[in-house]
Length: 191
Image (tube, rainbow, N blue to C red; front, side, top):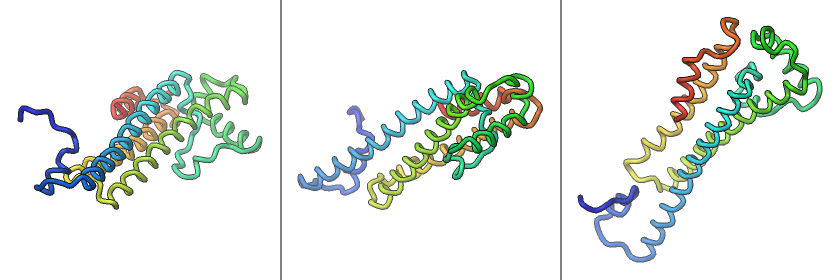
């Protein structure tokens, strides 16, 4: 094997015979959209890591004290909703010991960073799910790669769980921030 091989070269090798130009064009088109999907996932993931880092730097990570994967997509829509979320935040050690003088406007700032981080993660999960099922149903995923692409989604789901596991450590009263080892696991998993 002295030549460099393309990632999806095995698509062409399955048939074992030469392809006509229409099949070749179709294969290139399928490969193109698969690559676009993977690159979009990668760029989105890098963005998520950056937003997560900024969420950490602004101490925004504990502003949402519940893990609601579906209903958590909807932020507070009125002043009552904001007051309710702020009251929940007031019950955790970070507020009581560090941010006890925080205003509603300051709370909204940190809330929006954490909410944005979670929304971007949900978007990436949806992007993976839709792309995976479209390519899987159309049989456009190379045979031996289905497991790897499914693994990408599984790692994403694990990362979501680790994110909540990390956040929950800052809510139980033992520390005012999250446990550093949980933060390190969450970040390492993201990379």
